[in-house]
Length: 229
Image (cartoon, rainbow, N blue to C red; front, side):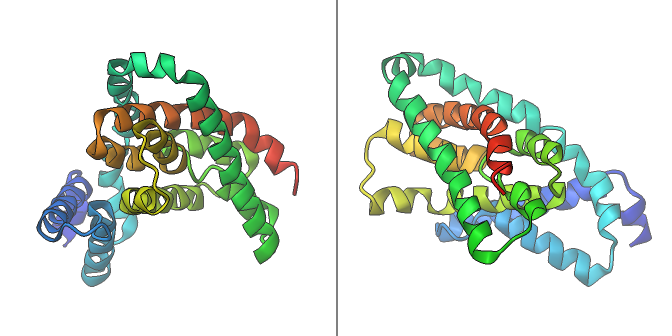
């Protein structure tokens, strides 16, 4: 195990292997709850616990993957560009939907804070839960939140969005592709957007735009909500 821990590529290798296993399981079972990322996280936890390898040793190698987060988010602009006509025709509706979704997300955090009597630090930590990690970390840090918990909240939000977005759209009879894209991108950032892209090109493009706008709006509105409590 010492050989593995000392390898620079140990964390990256384990991450890629477990994610590949997750993708394989998802393809075989075709059930939403078997999300590849969720499976990967569970397998990594089990592996580290079973082998006794320190998380820090794993993280030193796995952090290389996180460097790809920002360029991957930027690449979401490609499908958005391809659907530029739809964006121009429905610009007002899209922006209104994203604004409503962003405010609703933060109101939900505010409500949970009041119900469960959370402290201010936890409150501001959870405010950026629905935006992409690259932006959420900065928002949380600026407001005095706990960055590690913010990352977990963002990941969990994204996983649930990816898993249940299609089901929720069916339950509430959301059929218009633009409406689906706005809802998914605003509520579950890039991970939800990957699901939106599976639903269709328009859904993916609108979701890409929505996650970007939601991130900007959260940067503006989060400090205002933080001052409430």
